[in-house]
Length: 342
Picture 1: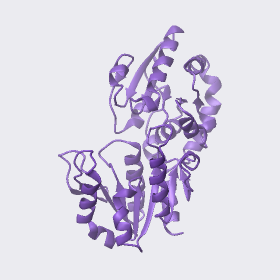
Picture 2: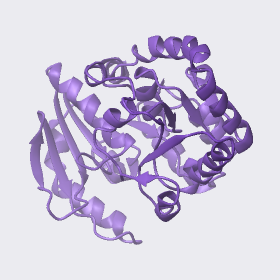
Picture 3: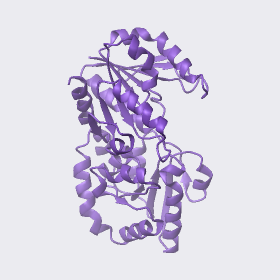
Picture 4: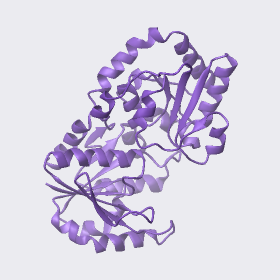
């Protein structure tokens, strides 16, 4: 099949959606399919067209974030309209509005959507719910990344996914921290919705308990200066699995990094700041394998307990590993193929 993905950002930009699209595309190419990705040209040095690991990537210039941006996007997609005519499948990753006018120009094209995450705003706005409902109704089927999307947006999922872990990379990594001090790693955006301030409170409570540890931060965002007060900030890292492998404990609340951490036999501690994010974490098949707490004192106590009794927690870590190693990108890609041939 010939497949056209629309994704706001793509490699070399670092992020969950970007990794999802790259990994799924890579597997599809290996299976003999032709994959094209249309994405934003988010910095000047990037080529407008190149082939990455067999994936044809077209980058469009969209300009600044303003009211006219959507019209610039539609104009750029129009310039690449020949791509639409040559493919079997159109699949949008969140950005269905990129394709919206063309949905009516090409009424018989098979178009689908993956809903990744949420808008980081709680509660979701009525506009956000409406946009998703329109995208759902104008698509032939969808994949929801997380079961919570059905509850909070009213989406009827065709399939539910939680992403995958690149098993070939993970098997090559050491899973032990070779240093002396306990290493705690935070992975994600440095923003309020990822719970970073909460984790900062947990760290202070651990220090009060005389816990001896290093705190390494792999991410960036508006809370970077706050983060620099409590640990070393490395920014977003392309091969973050290598850094997770060196940690003893991981603070994270995004699906892909949770999966990668469990596949690396790392205990995961996660938090939430609102009921939506709580459902995001608890309405998952891996909720029983991770520690989820809203109260900093309770989470600090559980981390402190783990540091003193890590051997007792090994059974859970091993069960998590057995589950996580089955969550491959090949399995996710098969889900896409099942969606398209229904």
